[in-house]
Amino acid sequence: MNLAEKAEILAEEGRFDLCTGVPGAVYKSQMNLFKTLMTNACSFDCKYCFNGCSSRKIYSYTPNELANVFMQLYSTGQVDGLFLSSGVAGSADATMETMVDAVKKVRGSGFKGYVHMKVLPGASKDMVRQAASVADRISINIEAPNRSRLLELSTTKDFDKDIIKIQRYIKEARPRAGQTTQMVIGAGDETDLEVLDAADWEYRDMGLNRVYYSTFVPIKGTLLAERNQESAGRIRRLYSADFLMREYKIPFKEIRGILDDGNLPSGDPKTILALERFDKPLDINEAEFEDLIRIPGIGLKTAYIFDFLKDLKPRQKAKLRKLIPKKAEPFLKIDGHSQKRLIR
Image (tube, rainbow, N blue to C red; front, side, top):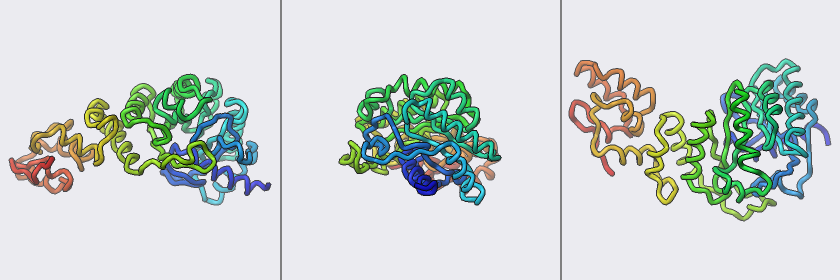
């Protein structure tokens, strides 16, 4: 097999690492990243993952091969950065050593741009430090919200020893672009309560930049091939609730209060929270920032503007109406007049 064929296969199989939520060999975030596996060999038995299938053929890069493929893509303007993941061939440290060597060769070829490297479950502290020395962002996927849910998906991964301990190593290593993680939603019977509780802990205790929620998709040949694909609606609701916690700093206990039997109700979480919080429209001239950010349609920047302009003269305050999005109108009143009826 030639290098081009190997690159195509490892990039294709790299799509099953969904930390970004975007499959494919080259994907857009703020840049075009070449996303690939170092090897598709894996000693773990994750039931949802194609790399755990015993019937597949095994392919691996050497560090030189990976560097050559990436630099060719980079030099022709097809990619701006590298996202390097891998199965675990033998030991985590042995596999990660080849990944670190590959990135060193990429750097030695003159590439100064963005590299995101996945840390493998069970890696040592020293190997995490080496990864942080060559990559901008390093991260490990927790896959499930807690120990019991991970046991539903894999008999070979220890949640605390193989994953959470590694996250602490990453936190200590202080990678330049921080760390992220992902959970596969729908591969097990986890509830939204478990998922969001885990995300809240990750943000508070681990200082993560982002938690990604990957839609479970059944893959032929895996142990979960007959399980139904998770709905896109559930993923959207989780991302919305996560955004409220991560960017708006709304306490998890507030979001927990709207859960129905452990799951988010249908509809926009921010709107549901607002209906729970407000029994009448807020006067825009008196509303506090903490209330403004909870109004549907009002983002952080608009809330800052409203809060800053509260001391304007009456005629100037009327101009605030132009800044109010339609989604927010039922929750606000200007100069004593409600914009629309607040309907529950």
